[in-house]
Length: 111
Image 1 (cartoon, rainbow, N blue to C red):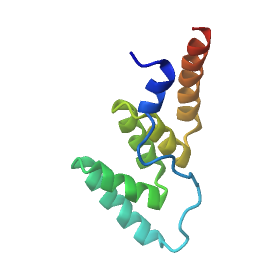
Image 2 (tube, rainbow, N blue to C red):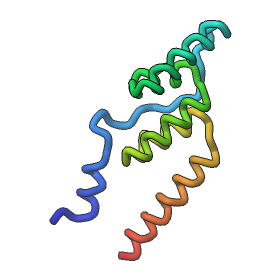
Image 3 (cartoon, helix red, strand yellow):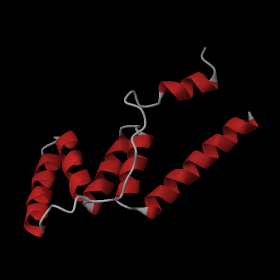
Image 4 (cartoon, one colour):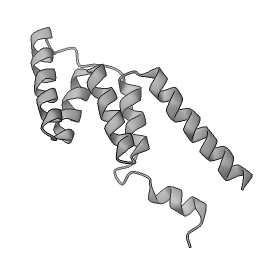
């Protein structure tokens, strides 16, 4: 049986950690941003989650980023969820995630 630390490493994303930034591209016009968000919502609703995520990140669409974070949590991808909540920004979602992570770490330390 693997020890606790090996199990944690198994859950690390294969692509590594991605630098987070809340800066948004300044070259998008309001009309372009709105059109992209509509397209992202269409992708999201049709199940093309990866395409929707890319658009939501590009446009900085808060609601879309939060929905993506919720999808990642549902799919047991907490680090990806945290990234989406951070980019949104969604401090209440981050706080909830951090409380759960803190409880898990405390439990591990107690063991």
